[in-house]
Length: 259
Ligand code: BTN
Image (cartoon, rainbow, N blue to C red; front, top):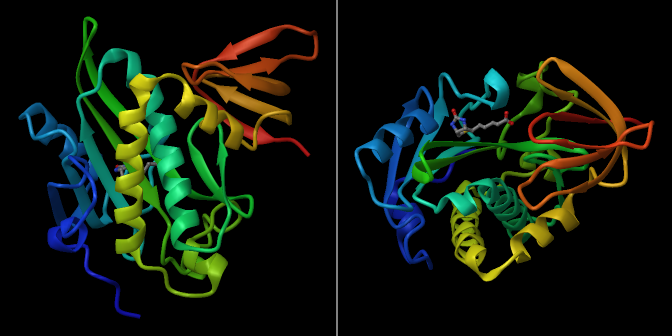
């Protein structure tokens, strides 16, 4: 199957957004789109600029992990200059935008797993890495990095197959990356612009988290906690009800569902 073009024009032509995705820079290969986006943000590139790579050779995941981005997947980063109050909501914007785009373009149902994974049929299809530079109470820049397994043959990557999937694998057919990206960018802008209007993005995110109400194990730094994932706070933290009845607020970590 010949992949569709991810040229700037293929993404931007007729894209119904004000700023996200109006400027696209695409590369056949990059070490990491987040690193390229951070360099450009430091140079003051326009808000909404998107960096896309057909493949990443040193894609980065959360907590120092690596991220596999072969051809056929989507690796992109969006440059934003949000107010500090909205920084913690960018994970919600990115994961909801990705889940909504998957559901608009395919017949698949997308779920969210705290803090920022998108799942299809219980397996991870997308990872999100938000990075920012904050000086005092001002955000210099934020970069939302999204890695989405679109057309990936899982048999080629046995290391990730037990816990990850791709859209093409779930559907048994090729999926247009261009359509996914254009939908995702439009959704990201709609949600980002809704942030000053109140807590509707937070509520949508909370409602879609498959994690809530479940028995979980959470690893956070060196520590591991178990309990029921009771809720989330508006800053994105997980509220874990521990066996002794205490409610623990966890800002960052990795969740395993326990049944
Ligand atoms: C995770 O689940 O650990 C997050 C993975 C984030 C991967 C994306 S791919 C585009 C962007 N560039 C990177 O180097 N990482 C993010």
